[in-house]
Structures are given as C-alpha cells and as structure tokens.
Image (cartoon, rainbow, N blue to C red; front, side):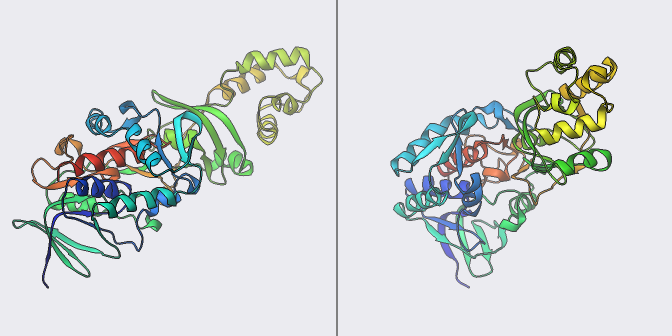
Length: 393
C-alpha cells in the first residue's frame, strides 16, 4: 500500500481536533484530519441539550483540575474565550448567556460544527471519516495505519478525547498511543457524572426522582451552589456533576438543602408562629413538597409542629444545613460528560502540547490531564489546546 504524505495528521475530528486543523491549515500546513466516526463533531452536537455550551465568559485557570494546575495557563491565555466568541460572531451565529457565564447557541449545536468545517475547508484541511486507526509508529516520519489507508507525517496530534460516553464512540486511543511512546498517563476516572447510592439513602432518594432544588454541595474544601436533582439511582443536576470531579470512592459529601437559611432558627420560629401546622407543611415553605413530606415523615414525630420536641427540630436542622452522605459510586463513563486525568502534563510542553521526549507527537483536549468545570470550560480547553498545537505542528 502506497502511503500519502502530510505535514500533520490529526486523529480525532471533535472540538480540539477541528480547531487544531484550522490553526495548522491557516499556517499553510498540509493537514489530514481523521476520525473513526461517520461524521465529525458528534460530542459537540449533543452538548448543551443540542445547543452547545461552547465556552464560558468567566474562564480562568482556577476552574480546571489537573495534577499540574499551572499547565493550562499558557494555552488559555493565548487562545481565550473572547477569541472563540469572535469566531462565532464572524459566522453570525446567535448566542445567549445563561447562568454563571455559560454561553449557548440560540439555535442548534450543528451551527458550531458547520462553522468549524467551513473554517477547515477554507484552509484546505483534508477530512476523512470512517477511518479506524490500527497503529501509529515512528521509524523516522510518523506512520499512521488505518483499516483503509496508510499515511506519513512529520507531526501527529492525538485529539480523540477520553473514555466518557463510549456509545458516542469514545475510546482510550490517545492514552494507548501515549503509553506506546512511553508518555505517562495519570489515573483516569469519570467526571461531571451523576452519583449513585444504596440502602437507606436510596430508599429516600428514589421515590423523589424528578425533584430539584438549589443546594450547596461540598466535598473536602470544594463547594458549589447550583441545582441538585433526585434520580431513581441517587443524585444528579449541576451541583452534583460539579462535585463529582472532586469526589473519590469512599469519600463523604455534604449538602446544604437550605443555603442562606439557618434551618434551626427557621424551625424554632415556626414552632412559635405556626404551632398547629403539620411539620411537612412548615418544611414545604422552603423545600419542594415531596421532599418536605419525605423528610418530615422520616425525621419528625407525627405531631403538630408546636408539640415537636426541640431536640427533634435541632436534629432535622442539622441535616437540612449539613446532610452528610457517602455515595456508593457514580454512573461511570457511560454517563460521564468528561474523563478526569489523562496524558501527564509533566510530559508535555504547555506551549505546544508536544510530548517532550517524542518530537512531533502532540496531545490535546480531553485526552490530556486537564478537566474543566461544568459550563463550557471543557470546550474552551479544547479550543485553546487545539489552537496552540496548531501553531506548533
């Protein structure tokens, strides 16, 4: 089989790979972009409920998790959220800001994919789909074998993401290639993922499936105030997804179900002002009714509020402001939005994303040990890391 020659081969036509291809193509490089899927940008298309939370206006390095928290600074400062917003505006894609700086398309996430493909086409990127990678080697040039073709290149960029959402085609290819070239990979685990519970905790949670409320959730020193959702298997919603990136198996999480309210003071005041009210109705003033009913039935005697002993009210108040529970696990990679961990940043250049000991081999996006918070941060890391690699290949 005769091999085609390119300046750079990028493996993975997702957010990071598309951006890298654009940046390299703009520099006049002959770029081949490969993907095993039958269409590019599949994860972009399902993101943000189909509207693509394409970046966050408040992107700062502190909102990314890595064993080296300084690594992301270079890329994020060289290609910023404002640069990507300018690209979106150039293509006249209408967008809006939701809570906490999150930016979404007014229309469809497909507009973002169409924009990136148009930018690729403008600089002559050769996009080839349904190409399964069989092997990558480097006798002198890089040799990339697929199930259909063979290619040679001066540089290779791995942009194949992490292990999350395997039904979308996620694989561990980038990590496998890294190990083959003796580039270390840190421990990986699912992140931005729902948490599951068992036994007594699940007995409370499962009947409350669909109930949502504003909470503060903590794990160690990290906390988030956002919405929490009860599910048939445990807890989800933005607050839980956020804290899951900091949670490890066996660790406790703490949930304030009434942020900004002193639950003890509230219950004691209602004991005076509404002594004949049922406790569930008192709790219903500040909690969703189904949750109020469940907590009253579980933690308070079947009496009117005025007859409930203070010790019972105080015990419930401690739970309301500091519910301590230990998840049994998470929903795993199948439901995780991202993979935490990845190619060790200590082995990469923060300026070029190139492996320090393997000239010409680059890793970008989710494949790298840099994980953003929920809310557009991981897309911004894809744009930023892809762009800086594209400047170097």
